[in-house]
Image (cartoon, rainbow, N blue to C red):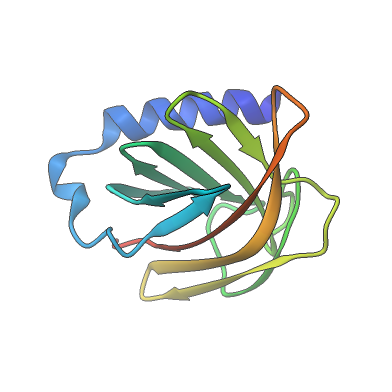
Length: 144
């Protein structure tokens, strides 16, 4: 339930806080959920959460700290340390998929001069409202 509330709040923030100027150089962030590919139109780095929006979906990458740190981050259901990350991906239809603790996959995070890069290898995300799962992978870059 916490993850759904966080996702809804972050999605609202994404669509209300972004200015047109925020869209510069963000097209290098992209991801795949199932058979659908997404290219970022907005990327917002906000207190340990990277919010990435596309015309047909969104992704939320959250660490268990107030900001991302360089290193290998274990992908978990709910991040509670600086070297963990949880992932929520949403489709345009409103379906939300979330990472779980049922795998041993790490995302690579690099922080350089305030810019964050995250590479997520292929991992399964589970539908929050159903029983299906989809494969997810992506590369994300903040520009601030």
